[in-house]
Length: 279
Ligand SMILES: [Mg+2]
Image (tube, rainbow, N blue to C red; front, side):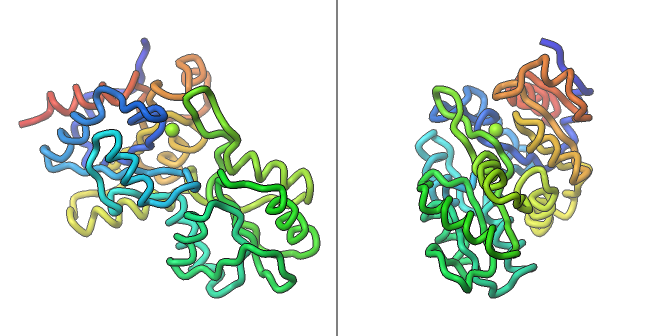
């Protein structure tokens, strides 16, 4: 398999921002190198955070999932599109009444962060937030369509992904549901999450508080999807590494216009490399 980039330079990376599905595991299957990679990063005094666009579950569900897969983590190890969405909404539309179309855990996290969350249609709703809704009903599509048609209000979506991987293939994600809403109403949301660079900025700021040597040039976004993970690294002016262990094929990677720094078989290659750099 062909690879791209001078892999030895990865030894200088201080902060790794890992996508999860397709990068560190696939569905319920942890990749064989993941555990060793995360320990090696810690042992070398480097850092990692998990950066996920999946807005269907709260951080607590991720901590649980990682535990099930044999990885100890805590809430501060995650940067999620839900966190980025609440930060964006609280900054730009504080106090506005939002109809939130998403899972119960999505609504709970937004509510706890201070967003004024509603899940019943009413005429005084002032905005719509769409998440990756694995509890989607036609009633929600109807409510959101009505709001977007009758009113000119902010329309925000937690993540632009079209599909989410499953063991058998894919299910429609937030971006696809927004496609349906656009067909019905002509309105398009403002997307948060990767590829917007804010998730990387959050991550770097968080780690800088414990390690002042970390900056964008020694931070690398690692993921298996080009239009979210790789575009995010590029937009943030951090390093970007595409791994071919998920949804992108070798052919797609080399035929794409994305200028990622590295294309690697999988994160096992990162493990081998930083091990060689250990002193
Ligand atoms: Mg992925």
